[in-house]
Image (cartoon, rainbow, N blue to C red):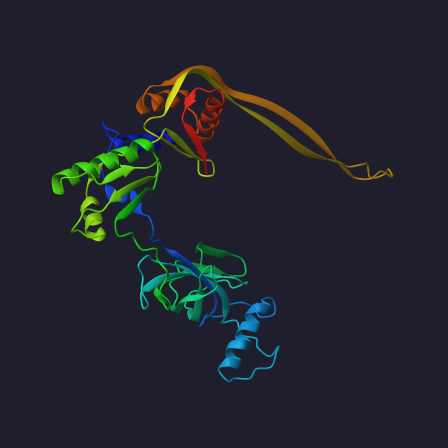
Length: 365
């Protein structure tokens, strides 16, 4: 399985691992950003899959408060509905949003509700980190997943206690975006790298020399590039023009390991100094065999259960292999020659890094 994954990555990379990408796909403008919002609300209209009010006290209190505001007096402890669920509503306000802008929100159950399928979110105020209401949300919930259970069997797919409302939120208060300066614009790399920053500045300056006959870009560090806006052009038009420039970003030497799924992604510039590697799997099996000791019927003995224990030890593998990688292709070929499963590959890469032979950073997710 791991070998097929490596081969797919190689096919995607092709013979030339470098790729030209658009400038606007690897940088962002400093200043405008998204704003996180969150709120607490109620979902109604469920088919008996909501919170049990006896176990979810906050749901009962919220439902009673909502009915009181609507002029409906309900005695405490008199409600027994299972069609209501308490939820947390979250979302992001896009940059440059104004009052009335629509946005998507995510709805997640808080109590013991089993499903939000068919539910409708009642109008919920959404607050930002400053505690001020910036948006509101309402509408029917779209849930991808279901859960059905009988007396002897149950089936579930996806997460039915989390849903999404497309365009269910609306901006009520315009966020305070940091405006781009009149004379200077700062670009920030999504993946900081000194060489990539220099390449971006050079590409912008080549374009500016042809268009404006002056250099406008200067790299400040591994993450930021500063632009001086030419005269008689707006910052928006300048960013639109340079956003289509093609740049070959430099990829850092990095190995990403996801131990939960057994996924290993090796960067193009990862190299391994020549090392000898052996890997053996040691397994110990303990088997308990119960035996019943039955006394003679004429005696006064008791029936007892005894156990026979059998222990076996086995170790597979153990052969040495030479692993060295001057390129991604040779590195993968050397790892595949050992014939290991993903767990073994992960252990070997971490051990090679500890030995100082892996010339790359390891990121464990």
